[in-house]
Length: 444
Image (cartoon, rainbow, N blue to C red):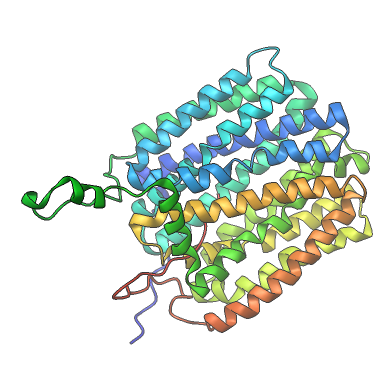
């Protein structure tokens, strides 16, 4: 018997939750500072070398560390209190970025320090995503997810423009100092603004003290990090619907290619660091504006039904760069593509409702790791391709490939989850008797 539709949540209700406000503002600070520093370093390298490949490698250095952090560190947010994990990650990153501010540190060392600091982003992001689901529930969680995704994208846009301006007028090290300060403030907000919660996953205990021998204890010991990683991968990939949702999330590697080669793209149009910052910002500004509207005014069933068509349009729009538009037209194309990227909200919600709480952070970490690592690899590949092709052609080819993949996923999703299905509507599924299925990523 189908229950009544859940009441729509409002922004006022979500922001009335004190803990959510603290987590949200900490995200504003850290994302904006991170993007500012990454864009500033990338533009510095392109200005000194003029190489699309090297600038793509530097930009990817803000993404590829997720392969380590996402696989081996994200589960910390399940094994330890999530507030503690977030504060520690912020503190470590603040110290590493502060070292980057020291004068006369060579560029290669700045990139290496950025790489290490980024390794602590996955456990922080997984803890933030998981604790948000602890703080909010139902349609409040859906709207809260839209807010955090919008915040992530807005922070990226603001940080990208600020990075271009910083390189043009201030220099790289002032941008890094701002980044270090944002981590300190973020740690204070999380530490003081959220309440203590126990770890979600507790170690198993023997049922009888008399049976606790050394052999029994060895059997009850925690599995190795590699074994836990393998279990997390099985959890995510053993269900066809979850695999499809995960791959919908990973389509982002195609339609964010303009970010990775923004500097050579802008230079080809006669622009400088500010133009490059605008190109990067335009890849997220549409989603920033459209996501809260999509979540507020489009119902859960309609959101999931639109997921496939919007994913196709997100990638297909980029094919227009094959006509070599000017800077203004390019910004419109990238912004329109990012508007269609709001489909990620539907994919994320369909994923999270299936994740058991005690495995949620690890599942988020694996999904996010795939997105970030895929983006990093795409940026490097796009930079290499831009050495022999025009940046516009590289973006158009990436958009065409993404369109084909999105069409295949849309057809697959229609087979595994018919339109208007119960899970598609965003309701939490009833637990299966023997196992629980799981899906997607927290975008941002």
